[in-house]
Image (tube, rainbow, N blue to C red; front, side, top):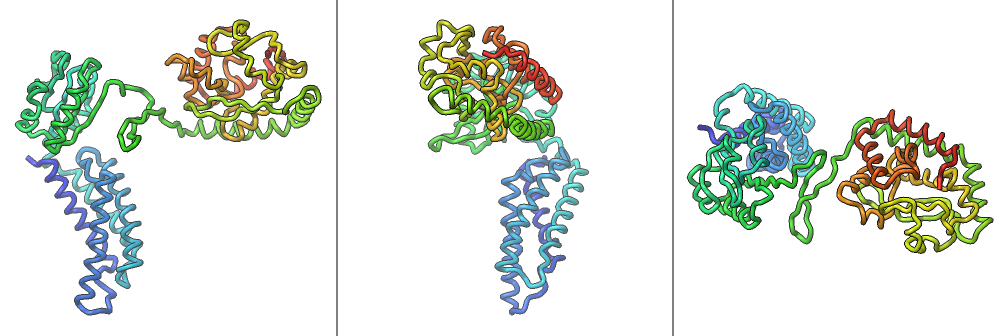
Length: 458
């Protein structure tokens, strides 16, 4: 049986030979003007630098973690990434500190990549130890999450699942495809007797936290790798990574960034549309500003903290439509709000000025938000940005409306406006999030023009 450690050691030796061959062809042994001792020292320094740097970077980037016989493409990618980083760092040291005069550094890059890649291709044809190349793994936990973890084809190809150990309050019958090897009380003995390489801890919601700690500590004392799969991380479209607070490790869970071409195009449309809108509506912009300034005391613009994508706060701009200090009176008027939930809408709000009423009727008060679009705080189309006090009252499902960049208009502005409940309002925003496309954005922008001209704003 070829154990994973033996396979990795053999691969590492082959890699070092490939690197030495690349250096040799590129001039490692030539161009020395000193004596034999100086020449030997220079050769050893260059070869040693490349060898040590390769060892560190290959381990850091996982160049040896994926056998070529299992996934050649991934193995090649990680190997070439590690070699490029090695060449950059070790090559810089070589040419500036200990390089032989005739070492052709660019040839080292090409030859090294070619030889390491060729070695991976040749290894992919070898079936020696392929069946036993998987890490021997035990699962601590007996629940649907643990069963799903060990039942997929990908998991079985990557790991050799020997059996499982249930935690207290868990039903062993939920793992019929694996043998039960013991209990949490004799887990250390089970790990030793079965020569385990990896401990997968996948507890149920009913598992005791103390037993999870015991399982991790037992694996740690034996120097084994532990992989933790809590059931609460069974989330879609989320990226999970490590974070630290006061040197204490934790999990950072956030939506996966969408860097698709459509999102890039959307941002381009935002910039072009906002810039064009500001230029085309500049006379209207100036007229609104003068009307606000000449008819009431206070600043032209009203700045309000709003909640943007992923809960980030930003300063949202509007033409001021209320008397100065009116926002502090909102809670006194809460009972007269036409909108249920945390949002506030009032048909005859006494705080609104005469000019402000006209601006709101045709949504002209929101023109300055085109500046927010240019700054990247908002988009032309997206859920309206709420204020922090409203977000604090959101239920768990309503918070998903701040998972995307807010916008000037959305489904609610076109089809709901002031006629639907707050729950329905949020449902409209979630419909937009789940069904977003550039075509949907274009349709909403065109319908928004119609709604604005009809003067249904409040």
